[in-house]
Image 1: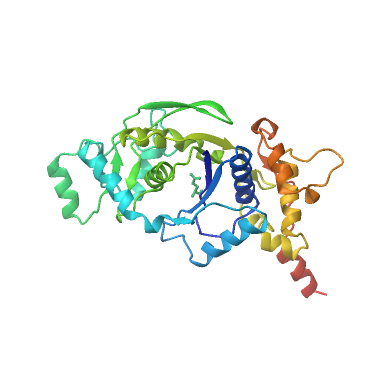
Image 2 (image 1 turned 60 degrees about the vertical axis):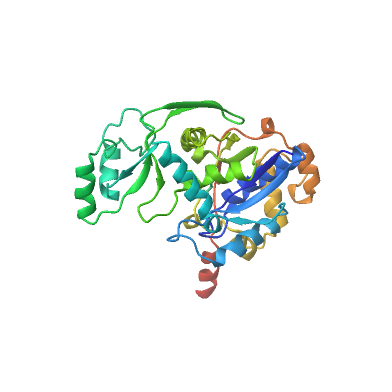
Length: 317
Ligand code: GLU
């Protein structure tokens, strides 16, 4: 059975952009008669807040998204990621990198020979064991990076078409021992038999890395479809600072979750002239859903109401 997924990081309430991507991923999976999975990507202990696990799931349910099977948490699957790191180590595919965050940033702004934005130019790729020992003696703890050295990987994105990119030596394990996003996502999508990943096109650039990693691990990567994001009025990626962008904010302003879903459906080109998105059942949206119907451009919110503004106005009365 085909299956899709949504994999949020529980670091905040889902905003309209997250909800729209989740809705597209869900509509796509259900329109193919497939399963839909939800996975919480909670490896980054610095940004994850436990109360958002339940809140994010409630927000998905509120707009009518359901899923099959238990919701996985990456923090409970560390053994799988460690096994993948061991496979990469045995294959000689990774090396320790002692660069500090600052050194990596400095290296990444230098001309980097066509690597992806922020791509790592391989500073620690050829360290001798003596140089490594010297870094260890300074108390530096290494991250682990893949020895990709500029491999080019192309793939046929089901929404964007052909895309290729150069793979840099990206991190698979952070220097605090935490498996990195690019490693965990590859392991999980294959382990969960996700056949097609639908997600925001901010991750298009990372996909050659993920396909490369899957191949090094001897895994068959899923298909990918990267869809345009929602942008705030200033043209930057939608964020909390733009105003009322979460279901809670919008409910405060009088918009029900069904109305929000209706607006998202309109923005996805799934509502016919004369119809109101709010009135359409989810099964109508599932029947109508196809990739060619979706707009090719990001959704730019022309204005975002400010829930806080309404209450501070009232305070001034
Ligand atoms: N957890 C990632 C995020 O919240 C999404 C990863 C993915 O869909 O591959 O941005």
